[in-house]
Image (cartoon, rainbow, N blue to C red):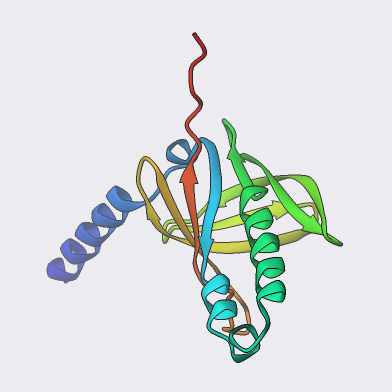
Length: 150
């Protein structure tokens, strides 16, 4: 009995040390890569398409990457850009981070979840949680560092 209590206490302490805190996310993060790009670029349709089609698709991918920014704010707030009918829309949400590092984005009645796989000072890797098990793959963000003006 004492051994299981000690094991539970030790496990709780380890999880507590590794749990990501909202404070670590504060700032702006730019999407730089996502697994969907690799799937597209290795698909038979992409590989067999003409150069103009591939260039057009590459342009759309870059546009999406350049315009996907998550800004974590003090407290539990997030503003982020999303695409609705091919247009960029700024959205606001609340976030919660569970002890197992699953971030829940709460926007009105809707919620989305993503597992935080990696976080350091300049890199954030999220993996959307899907109820059907067919996730979109990993999303890789880099911290936007504002240059100080002279």
